[in-house]
Structure formats: structure tokens, C-alpha cells
Amino acid sequence: MHYDTIENRHGLKHDPFKALIVPRPIGWISSVSGDGVVNLAPYSFFNAVSDRPHYVMFSSSGIKDSIRNIHETGEFTCSLSTWDTRFAMNTSSAAVPPGVDEYPLAGLTAAPSRFVKPPRVKEAPAAFECRHWKTVELPDVVPGSERGHYVVFGQVVGIYIDDRYVRDGIVDTGAMRPLARLGYMDYAVVTPETVVTINRPEVAEDGSVVNAQAEAWDGTYR
Ligand SMILES: Cc1cc2nc3c(=O)[nH]c(=O)nc-3n(C[C@H](O)[C@H](O)[C@H](O)COP(=O)(O)O)c2cc1C
Image (cartoon, rainbow, N blue to C red; front, side, top):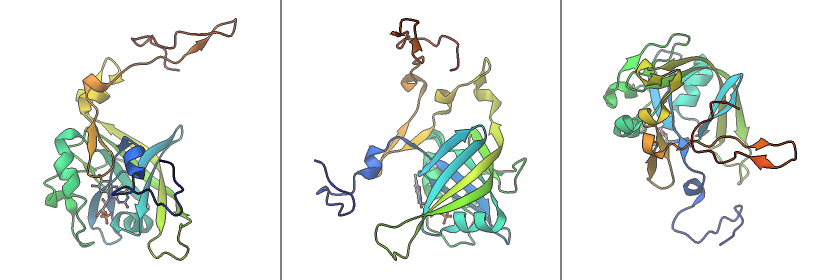
């Protein structure tokens, strides 16, 4: 199959788009409203967009509590969602009224952040503390659509890492078992068994590419 996305007649049961851009990290976004109500919700249109400076983004389909709070108070955190917290993460996505704090609702603990007001998820092995930089509204396929889609960019001003996952100066990502979103109602999980190492290729003087497939890390972070 091969189809245009404006008409979007894919002929499948559901739009396959999200089942094909995978796996997507889940930004577990915590924010605080202008009147101090704490909020937590997962967003899988989420990613890092730069590492020096450190920036992340997430995208909101419509104006939800997270984006509203971030526009009010200018800060948010993203905690790492993992296998162990998968059901709590899902519970925190419930469409509850704006005055409801999702931390107790999902049985989670709000841990204080160091550089911003919104807390992080204590049960998460890592979290990013962010200052809102800019929100970009995406042009809609159907002009005049009421919902709107908004990409929120944040500068990461602080990073929390649970020291138990730092080994020999390296973060053991697989041991954290990060959860990732696929399409439909599916998720994937990174485990130590699914982590593979591939060194970057080197170009020899004669222009040939060498060492592209070494099985163990050669120790150079390119
Ligand atoms: C794994 C997962 C990923 C989600 N990703 C997004 C997303 O990228 N954008 C979005 O608008 N909603 C997303 N949602 C739905 C929101 O979490 C949900 O609408 C939530 O109620 C929003 O909360 P808030 O109003 O407190 O911000 C996702 C839900 C789940 C379970």
C-alpha cells in the first residue's frame, strides 16, 4: 500500500501512522497551574531535540492541562516512564478535571525538583527539569479545526538520575527498563537483552569504510 495522508484513505482499521514511528519515548510531564495544582500526564509525541543546549519537546493535541499550566507558570518536568510504572503512567493519562492531582490518583509520589517548581515522579529512575522556551502551533490539515496541535519546547536546566543506575561512569539504560509507545494500545520495553552496541564507521585514508560493525564498544564516543 502507498497512500496520500491528506485524504488519509489507508483502508486499514485505524490510522497506522503511530504504529510506524516507533518506539516513541514517553515524556511523563509534570506541571503546576498558576494556582498551585500539581499535574502529571504522559505524552509520547515527545523527544530530545538537542543535547547542547539540552532541549526536549512534546506535542499536545488540543489545549490540555499540561500545556495550559506550562503557559501559566513556564516550567515542567519529564520523568522517565518504565516497565515498573507502566500502569501508574497509564492511570495518569485519565481525563480527570483540571483540579485533580494525578500523583495520588496513580499511587505515585511527587518528589521535589531542584531547579523548577513542578515535582518529578519519585518512582522514576531519571527526570528532566525544564523551562518553557516556546510553543509552536502546527498548521491543521482541515483549516479552522477547533482542536489545534501544539509543540512545546523546553530547555532542560536540571537532570536527576538515580545513582543506582550509574555503573563505571555510564548510565545503564537497559537496567532502567524504559517504556516506549508503539501504535494502537501497544508498548515496548528496553531491557539489557535488547540493548545493542554499534560503533560509528571510520573512513580510512583510501576512502574505504572500516570498523562499522564491531560487536563491543571501542570506547570512543563519537
Ligand atoms: C502513553 C500515552 C501517550 C500519550 N501521548 C500523548 C501525546 O503525545 N499528546 C497528547 O496530546 N496526548 C497524549 N496522551 C493522552 C494524554 O496523556 C491525556 O489526554 C491526558 O489526560 C492529558 O493530561 P493533561 O490534561 O493533564 O495534560 C497520551 C496518553 C498515553 C497513555
